[in-house]
Image (cartoon, rainbow, N blue to C red; front, side, top):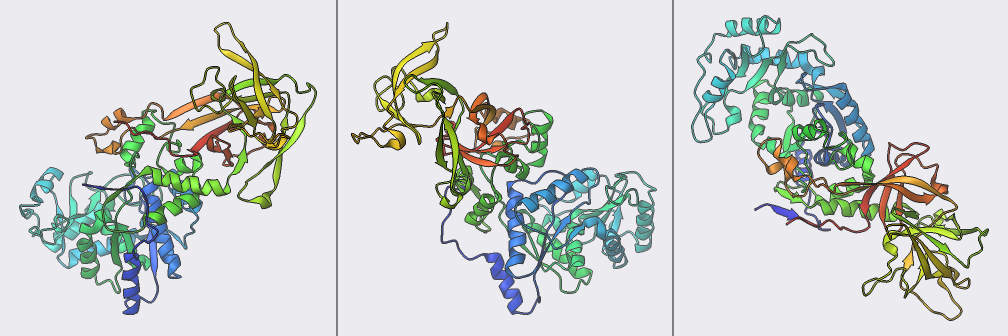
Length: 561
């Protein structure tokens, strides 16, 4: 049964990756530490990649070493410069800087030479079997594989065919180059893996120079070695590939080979990180794009208003282990909430406005009221908002016939308008359908700031926006995209769509905010008092500011039965 991590311990165990590195440095295996972050540029990075980025870059930083960005561009049919640019932006946003940018394609000549060396050593052969035949020959976990009929092909014949493959003489799928290892190995990855295949496609960097491309398991260790990587840090699914990683480095006589160390992936419930399924969400119009604020992509979290510092804190709280676990999404939200509580400026905004009129307040009077920019940072001082006879409050903050323990505005209770006065209900107006459109109140002129001569106190405090200085804005309320903890557990690529949360996005128009916020810019973050944390969306224009709710003031998500 999988472990669900709801909270992170403050006393995390020692980082086993650092323990291995300390051991290597003490024994003189390496003189320095060099890591790399090696994503394939075939999609946008997600929350799982954030963990890998933090581990790769922070490890190098701890040991005063280097961390390079290396784009694994060995599959030209799926890669694009758009993804390269997005990956770079995401890494910088998380707060890391690489020492160098490399591409696997930088090493294509070197990798090709290594393939020729394997052929010369009798450790690689051209196989003309079909993909189905190769799969069948591979065997199963309980049955050994079967040697290919081409396995003992003469070295010179293999060299000739490989050269003709490289020259483009054969069509895609006609033949492959396989390493000759052990078809009876208990590790399926060691059963003569394919190391080169024909792929007649234009590469985004090398153009049409190559029509044969190395497989990841062959290119990866050789790229690490060529680059000078000392510790190849990767997720746990590559643990069974480590013997193959080491075999290539050993038989090719690579001096001081890198050490591969695996760690558990980050699995967060209520999210989807499969690139294939995320692409389907985008292509089917179920989300607005890769940066939809409901997506678990880094660009989606950035657009939603998640601070990079909070994402890094989340990764740090989870720690590094080899045990499979599922992280509760609420922990990520908690990290976001903690950071924004300390750092977000405060603002009063009304999302579902109801007008109130203070009948005994002078019609032409406008007061400037000071409110804290951030009570946690008094050095920021105060900002000024207008107070007038006509205001907007939340519709939910008024009821004619409230239930017990209702402490907002109603006929029987006096309430305080934040940083202003006490008010009481007087009357109300309705439209032709009986809906309340305006609430009339009276105020106590001697109650400013919550202090009255008779010392009376009220339990209810409401936020408000002056109608005199209010401007309209659009607010997008986001919830989790899925109703179930494991939306990708379903078979196929379409059934997960049945688990979409129909209430994951609510768009509110005609929301009210003070005109002093008319010059906000994309990414600006605020705590809307009593509402939650919001940031300015990139869809904003001069005439229509759009705010995204980053996270509520407290976790209010209800798990579906």
